[in-house]
Length: 473
Image (cartoon, rainbow, N blue to C red; front, side):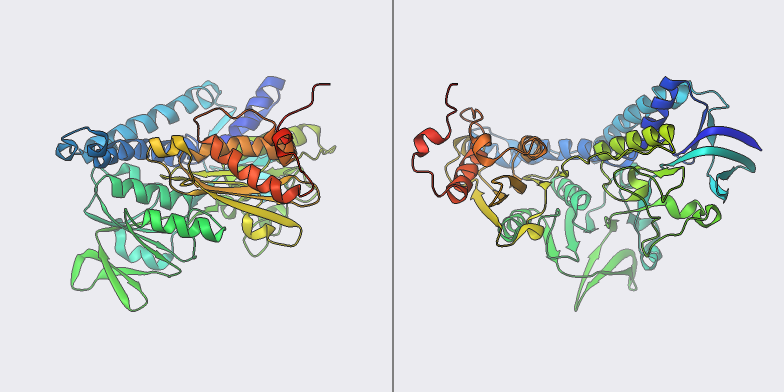
């Protein structure tokens, strides 16, 4: 039996963040990594998907060259094998960089390659070796959700974990699940010339909850690929042609060459045999843990990143790795940390951004909301041909502070950060309106939406000319 002070399971964003801090302290630790190196973001998520989106968006612009006075755009072609090859090259660059700057420098005593399982309250088994650790951080990530029944279509079933391994793309692909990843990849595939059918069980896409924005988004994306909402899919091989996949949507059947399952990801925590550590799980298979400390029950065991399924986003995983390791080091003294304002972005075109609370959770007598369409005279959006979508803001009547926002617009990723910072600083709508807005920029649409909201929040204000100015003290 080998004894260590700290054991970290998983070399993803959370695990590597925790490891880095222990290295700074010169602590005795072991990092246990099973499977491929490189974070989920770098290997199968954020980065390869953005590489595909980048190529797809460039190719798609040929459809608008003529209106700009640029000729012969219709003569352009896309070499899909080269596009996919470049994605893998970039993927390898990112994952290689992660490995070089983290695990490559570890000694054989510090790094164990293998899959860990609990065999006792503070004991792990890896490759037949028993590791007894005083404090343990669980950061073993997640895997795509794939219904068992769909396995019958074999290698025609893809997830975000393997789509980037393809050397070419077929003519027809069904993307089932139009959350952030499904929407991004579905649109990118369509822009690369694939005939895409998008299917989503919920009556929304990209996580939107504001009805007007959902309607705008469905109308916009339906221009590029077929969208089916509120329908569950049954997947099997076409009995008359085993080279095709048959997808049943109620009384309708669609035939495609491959299926991209984009139904979310599930934690790998079920592979750790938590029962041996005396830790129970809920109906979702998740142990009880505190989202402000990352501690499981009152044990010297902490869970961070995709493994806990709370906010499976890279910057949140990094924060959770910090919380977990700080509390592991200080255990039994445990400190609670404030969570950052929720922030999520779908890198579709137009983009979708969700900041703070969702619209669906904020509807009530104490809430005011405004929805400002980009088609309402935002000069920069018109010039760029991006006068599509809208901004939805919702605020608390009493505090005059924003509760959240949902955006469906070009470059929403940038406005989303400003709004998240505003919510983080707990600024009122009046304070935000005293910030500078340059011209001509898309941010002026946010200014217009804030002005509409302010007129509802401050009905007593009579001099709006001075409302956006700060008196000189």
